[in-house]
Structure formats: C-alpha cells, structure tokens
Length: 245
Image (cartoon, helix red, strand yellow):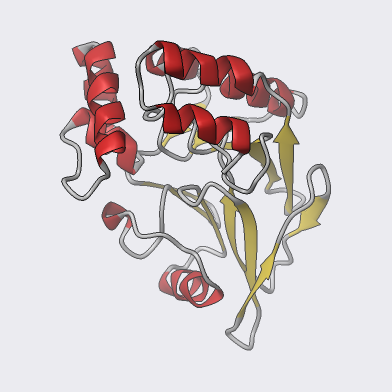
C-alpha cells in the first residue's frame, strides 16, 4: 500500500493543490488526511470540497476541525477564536456535520494514524520531545505512528534500548523504516509550515517497501496570504505564511 499523508491544511487551497499534485506522482492507494482541514486560512469550503472529491481517502479529526464543528476551546487565543468563528460562518451544516463526525484515529496493519498524539488523541497534546515520542510509541502496539499537529516535519525512531532518537528528514529522500524499530512520524503542515520555510509539507509511505519519503512543495503562499487579509481574518495568519513560522 502507498499512503499519501497530508496534515494541517488549515483552509489553504493553494498549498493543498500543490501537495496533491506532488503525491499523485506516486499513485497512492489511499490518501490519509491527518486533521486540521480548516482554521487560519481563507478557503475552508474549497478545501473540504477538494477532499470530498478524493474517493480513496481517510480523514482524521483535528482540534481546529472539532472547534469549528462544535465550539472554540476557551483556552484558544483571541485571534484563533476569530478564525474559528469566521470559518464556521462560511460552512454549511453538512460541512459542520462532516467535521464533527470525523474519527480521532485510524488503524491499518502496523500503522496508527492520528492528529496530535497516540496516548490521548482527544486532548490534543503536542509531541515535542524525544521523551514524549517514546511514551507514544510505547503506548500502542503499532510499530509506526503518523501524526500532524506540530507543523514541522520530524521523525522519531526507537530501538531495543527504549530510547527515542530524532531525525529531521530531507525532502525527496526515502527513509527505510526498519521493522525492528518503532517510528513516530510528524509529517509537517500542508497549509501553515512553521519551520522558517514557506514550502508546504507532505509525505508518502510505502508499507510494502517500508519506505517513508517527506516532501517540501512550492506553492503560491503570497496568494494564500492575500486572501486571508482580504477576508478580514487576523493578519498574523497571513504574515505567518510569508515567514514560514
């Protein structure tokens, strides 16, 4: 099976289309959307419609999807709540129902797919350290965990010594996921990269070959940022696209 992995799209249709064009080159058997389809950006309807058009898809719920579908978390920053409220007003009830009904996890074979973390996916906690990745890998039977949420492409590996090691992947370079180890992959963000790069992130996993390849993709981030400003959304989210942070 070849899986196309896309996370944290955040209503950025320019970035999504660019990443879909990239992963389509590998003829994926399944598209896995790892949550946060909406929020921040100006094109939530276009993003949801594009994802609906893909028949061989699995879609996981992210914290922004939950906030738009139900209610913004009171702990969210004011500008984030503004974006959540604006997004909700753009959507039809069928869109809100779709977001609300998304599962928190998807399991297939030796893989677990989740938005934020494997231990308590509903709490939206971040995995930011080797220790946190180790706890996640120890908490599940699956040998490979794929997630988003962090907005930076990273890969953690854990061998028989029980200690996790961090790798920063290189775009386009396939990584063999050795079966004797456990793996925790953060695939990066399609629609709002935060590692000081304006390039969108996505990945392809070939489970038959046990190979994972991360990609950074050029897209028209200036148009995406301009749409955010014209929509009256907080300009911070546009600035972020232009800075990649």
